[in-house]
Image 1 (cartoon, chains in turn blue, yellow):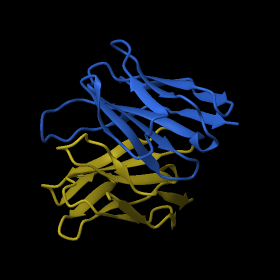
Image 2 (cartoon, rainbow over the protein chains, first blue to last red):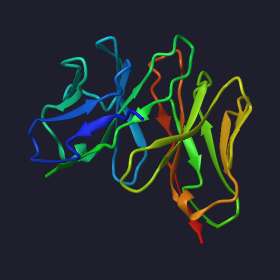
Image 3 (cartoon, rainbow over the protein chains, first blue to last red):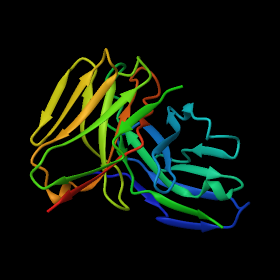
Image 4 (tube, each protein chain N blue to C red):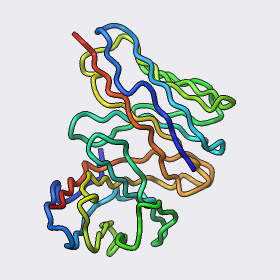
Length: 117
Length: 113
């Protein structure tokens, strides 16, 4: 069964450094998402992406964050200048486009644990 | 803003007993309600979902009920087994927007053998 993959599984960085988290969504999916989960807390929506543009972003997704689909398979999340509070598990997810008004199951990747020192 | 409340935060049951987890959502336009199971260190995995045009859905030992008027939905697990032990998250979504999922705070379920 196809799965969403993410690399790296664990990223350790110094405060102020840039990080890029990578995701390969399921191949026939067209909606992509990033979520984060601070240790022991709920999963929080960051951004959704469709048709090569952001369709919605949360308050967390400020100017330090950006997303890109550089080619036909990868979907990346960049944090320009990491802060201590960016430490979390970052999940990528993807879903099919089933047509307007149709529900869509989101499939999650295994996550990247980001540790900012 | 959009919010999903989930209770209880922890739930301990004896193997074979039933477990019920409840969620309340704030956005009346929400129309899709998935439940995810997350084992320690693993990705969230969908176990069951329900759309707003249905009041109840069942899949073997798992069922979900939805009360649109009260904006409540619940997960019911019958005949619990130790492998059901995990964190369960409810979520709500609007399929006419970006399809983002708004998650509840999670319920840690422990099934005692």
